[in-house]
Image (tube, rainbow, N blue to C red; front, top):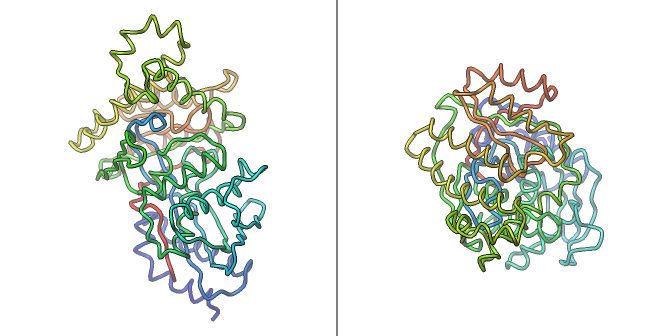
Length: 423
């Protein structure tokens, strides 16, 4: 028996771990997925003495739509979809990275500086994560990786954050005994996305992926964000989390995403502040005439959204901690309406209002029985829905008719962030 097949045989010893990460119903499917990835690694790179498995989850944003970049609060959860890597170390700084469905990457991480032409590529993320870890005092080195992901790009579940956090896990597992704190994992990943990949995201996505579970995060101090784990099982309460991918394209939307934090910070600057976290609704209302002479009405609406959404997050947290599910669902709907009316991130072009339609359908299907809101960055992509278990079949059928077969993904919350297995 080859070493690869020996490792696959030992997957049976990891069944409890796989159940924890993916759920009982996914156990056999995940064992087959892990086995296939180990075989792919051997096919690509030959038999190796050391092969590790590193996984990092996607995330779902539950509360705090576009609050993190202005030092606000969020409520988020890691989900049972992930970026998964079979990886072995190299003796040099070369990286051979084979991700299912994408062209192979062959590069070195000797030069830590952002490289011309790499912006918007996986190469940029690899380089950015390696540079961030080296700067933080961690050892880095080359690696041979076979990668697969169930976090589809454009799904609104943050495929980029899952990949970035997975990359920190790879270098941490191979060269640092897998000891990096999850907050630093998230910070290094965010920096790679901002400075190397070129996407102006906040820290929400990476923090939820790195921390795992259901968490509320306060980004008042982005160097030391306050993270608190919550215990709440929506499934036990009879609800499923269903993400609906509406098929809208994220292409050419970077400027729309970037305009949101930019306009919010323009409002903050009117008060001598860097971010809106330090501005209140009373200040906005009290200075509204002067503000309208300086900045656009859209920027003001987005500022009102931030202030209200930031206050809404601790209300959502309290509702869960006190098991007031009806109040929580009411707050979810209020969050979604604020995003639609004030933040204005549900569509970028009135010729494509797929997200608007998905929200309208959810309201008609779930009124008085569930919750619905835009999910993540917005403008295209997905909605998040809290659906009573007995209605999941009907809900999925209706959404699939509108947006195509497979539009819906039913999620479980994953209790762990980045993980490493050595078989």
